Image (cartoon, rainbow, N blue to C red; front, side, top):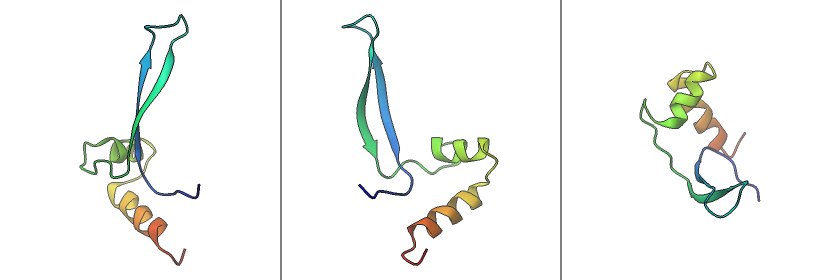
Length: 66
């Protein structure tokens, strides 16, 4: 569908109605938290990227001239 950028999806695992359970998609947050303790910066840090690198990538990715 042509989407790009950073978002956060929330899921729940529901095993109440079947043996195997199912993953239920709850919502997409198109503006996830960006504090130093939010998930997106934490994931970037685990991958070896600084907060500044993450912000630079987000701005460059949003550019129409990329």
